[in-house]
Length: 359
Image 1 (cartoon, rainbow, N blue to C red):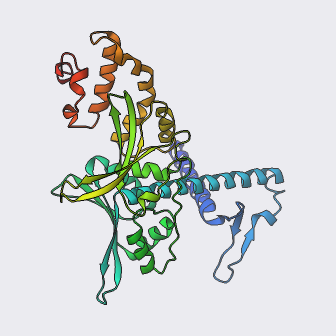
Image 2 (cartoon, rainbow, N blue to C red):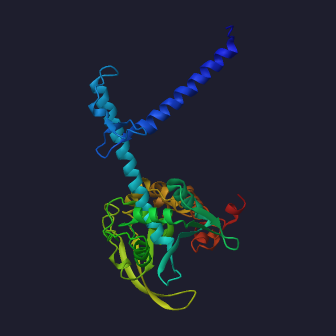
Image 3 (cartoon, rainbow, N blue to C red):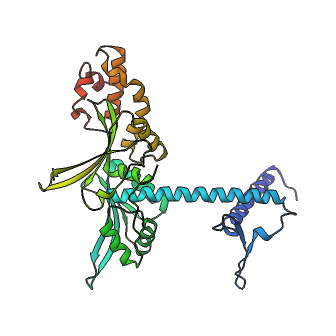
């Protein structure tokens, strides 16, 4: 038909597109991964809803039985990996909710409790936490506060809220009163959580993302991680002894005054504050990264700091002390507009601050 080179190129392109769509259709609609890790061929029509197991079909004309088994094993491993990632996400998500989340319970027209929305409010600096949640579960919206530097993640449709409550059931540990009412609203049986947080559980990183702090103890010459909550019947049950292998936190309870109301209240703090514990702390957050970039940057510098921390005793004009001071100034300045108010900054700057401000 007189095809020229351009027609041939179009022909090849269309062929590639068609085979791509065929493979997508085959993967997404014909193969169904079952609970056992096998896969089923779905032959559904208007009058035939039977599922034919591929495990019962001879693969002789297509490929060897051994290759079928290898393919099944690959699918099983991918499925297991997806379930593992799913579990890690929702444990982390529960930590975010327990940190800065809220179950907005209101009264309906019959004076009965009703879940209006699920909300998480964070500083704009940490909006990446909210976008990660939204991008992973494809639910909710993010709204910026017009008057304050905060962003709000909101889920308000009944179907979406019910989905989240089901996925977080058994994982919420601190916002129990509101979560119980949310479960009752959807007629979901509330699952008691386990307060013994297991090794490398991402729940801890979710709490640190929202309520935790990564700080430098100048007198102790170490990087620390701290969590502090209002002391109550739920926070007192938290047990992080096994969460970071080989690193048990120091637990401190004390009385404090609220800056807003001036009322006195009791708090409980979990402090990771030893030199030997810095590497276990680093290892935990390399497995369960923080999505507050400000805190994660500080954690990633632990390994480098261990190599130079000995220089803090060197003479102030030496190259060793300059390496030490440059490291700390970079560490304290990262995404921290108030870094000049940190008390130890004047002690490590030479000449004081001029070198850094002129940079």
